[in-house]
Amino acid sequence: MPEQNTEGRLKALETAVTNLRRRFGDSAIMRLGESTNLDVDVIPTGSLALDIALGVGGIPRGRITEIFGPESSGKTTLAQHIIAEAQKAGGTAVFIDVEHAMDPVYAARCGVDVNNLFVSQPDTGEQALEIAEALVRSGAVDVVVIDSVAALVPRAEIEGEMGDAHMGLQARLMSQALRKLAGAIRQSNTAMIFTNQLRQQIGVMFGNPETTTGGLALKFYASVRLDLRRVAAIKEANDVVGNRIRATVRKNKVAPPFKVAEFDIMFAEGISREGDIVDIGTEYGIIDKRGSFYSYGDLRLGQGRENVKRFLRENPEICNEIEARIREQAGLPPRKYVERGPAKPVIPPAPTIKGVKSAEDVE
Image: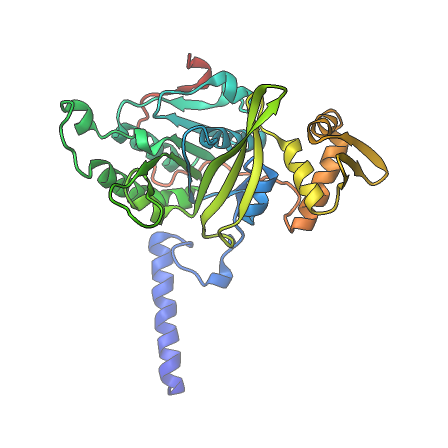
């Protein structure tokens, strides 16, 4: 290619880029190497095992995450732990309770600051998604949880009669909403989380008949999809005190997918941090297990997994030290949070928000 022609093309490109940046802002177009935000900001999930499986230490901000699974598999619990982690960093969280099943007492046990959690209990799917859009576009919210997609009932279905056929209404609603939300979520650096339920496809003879509700759009727009399954019950004597959960990363655009993590969800506290540390520490050789006895260096931690969990809970300094070694060996950075500057609305002014209230007002 002639040198003069190349220089002319470069000048034309430079002029076009300058004009685009003048019209739409400096971030409208740039070389990939010039980007100041190549590293993905994350919010920890509350489970160290899941943070390692996700590859980046948590769920990504500025992207959409879907958490799905059967009943009682820990979807809402995981979402509430993510909210708690965001609040610990000084962030603002919103829980859009479409199922109208919010339990403030259990949320507090999971570490959520319910006095500073905003909760909305919308009447229709359109209202829920409009509230979510307004909050995302405000630029002042760190995490928004919609629980769940299956409960996003279109207004036409609510106003119709029982038995009326409304083919594809929810799928069209989700497709339109995600088209509008995707760009705003990226610009505001908000972590958007959808929980979802499973349904059975009729007539599937081969393969997995399970599918999620709300059509196909969410599967495409989500950067991370987590599949949660209950694999065992945790018992003390004859009482069931928790569930063993297996999380599979079905889709991951920020790290290699298909990693698997297992963790405990205790009914009295949510995700067991100490259980993760015992399991991963033993796997990595940081904690030595001989028979039923566990030790850390020359320190005897106890006999039996539950006793070791109790010891770590009562000795947070040792627990933090083991976690730091696990993170270093797993290739994760030390736990840190990204501080956000003043809110910058994506499209000012933000729409009027109706139906949003503090969690302490939810009975």
